[in-house]
Image (cartoon, rainbow, N blue to C red; front, side):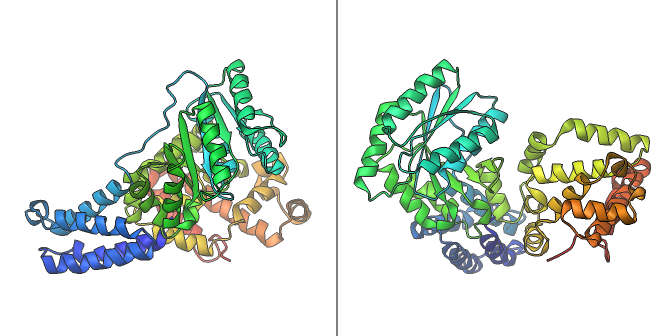
Length: 455
């Protein structure tokens, strides 16, 4: 996420962070590089101008000049100003109203509103233990209504049906009544995509807002559009009293212009980031953590939170007990580990959040076979329970059966069995000598012939 901005900023700041003494000249030179990095990242010009001025004013002040480590102090100022641009802290949804709390989603067509409705519904149900109803007021696209119905079933929330013959206001008023009867805590309303210059469509959503008085009005926008995202959000804010923004496709955005421009230009906070296609891929927006990631310092707090929310604790505890007792690490355990990693966004997502590992995440994204883990899981699923417990049984005809059943090649299966053996050895080392031995054993996964296959 925002890799090109991160690379440029890190490169610009590297020259100054090691300086024992800062002068106006070397600060000016670094700030010129920072300005160029932000402009190349498609950050809005007024935002760049204000950011550079704020950093310069603080950098030439006493807090840097009297610091024992001026270069590090300068880096802290840049981080603090990045946070200030994006908002000082995470702003959560305001749901402390008489149920159902209505959340209205607005935005351009193709920005990812319907998927974001499902992601938000899932987050509220799983994290906040809310009972959620969703409804589509997009009467122009029958496929949008059907899509939301399918997604609602997938994420396990209540769906209120609608059709293209109805008026949006009538649909949502009926949905509110339905949500009250169902004792839903939250009602999320999906709306039709519209352009800010389309007066009739903007009048329609303004009338819808006035009729249902939502507690939250969220603008859903594609992060890939850069500073245009902020400009469009401002145009919508002139018609609707927006309470926040959801930036979609943030995982694919290497520049970061939208994230750094939206708050300053609209005055509205970014509340969530869409970071993938899965319905679990919606993260609360934390400006301090994102600033840390942009500067190559990682985001360990988010990684820990993800682990707490998405790792199956029972399975993890069961595996820990097995390892402690010296029992065999079998292929079912291996499959569980693959699933746990997948739940946390895969290996690239995890690397991206570790300090100093942004480049490794980028290399993994470019070189790692992205379908590898799905194939490995398919192969394990094609085995019998006995084969999963005793991989040494897998020979000859068994290999052919497993690869035919999973649509893979024999060499894929051989590689899987080899990687499992290496994991087994690591688990044995953990029993006797703890984490230090395990970390030494990790080198085996990347050794000749033992690593994950590249593209």
